[in-house]
Length: 201
Image (cartoon, rainbow, N blue to C red; front, side):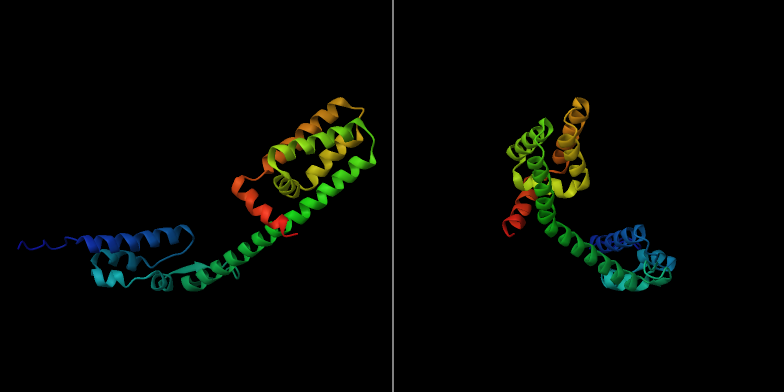
C-alpha cells in the first residue's frame, strides 16, 4: 500500500477544512472577527479536530460589535442578539400581514363612501376602476394592494372623484391608482395567504 505523502490532505479533511473556512468567511461578512492564529492553524489541524469546530465553538472564539451597546462582545453574544432581532422582525412582519386585511377594508370602505357621496363623472370612473381591478386580480388582492399603498390610494381616489371637471387631472390620477394597485397586487401564492386572513375576519 502506497504511503500518503506528508502534507497530503484526505478527502474527509478537505471537506472539514472547507466547511470551517466557509463558515468563517460567511460570518466575517456579517461583522464577526476570528483570531488570525486560528485561521493560520486550520490547515495543520487533524480531521478530528476540524470536525470538532462546530458553529457553536467557532462563534465562541469570535468577537463582534454589539448592535445593542456598540461594544465588542463575544461572537456567541452577538449571535444571540441577531437571533433576537430576527425573531422580533419576523413577529412584526406577521403582525403587519395579519393587519393588512383590516387596513384594506378600511380604505376600500372610505373610497366607496366617497363614490356614493359624490354624483360626479369622476366618482363613476372610480367605481369602474375598482370593479375592473377586482375582476382582474380578485377583491382579496385589491384589498392588500390598497392596504400597502395606503394614503397614496386614497389621495388618487379623491383626485378622481373631486376634480371631475379636469380631464387631465382625472386621467393622471386614474392611471396612478391603477398602477398602485397593480404594483402592490400580490402573486398567486400571496393572494391565497391573504385570502385566508380575510376569510377569517
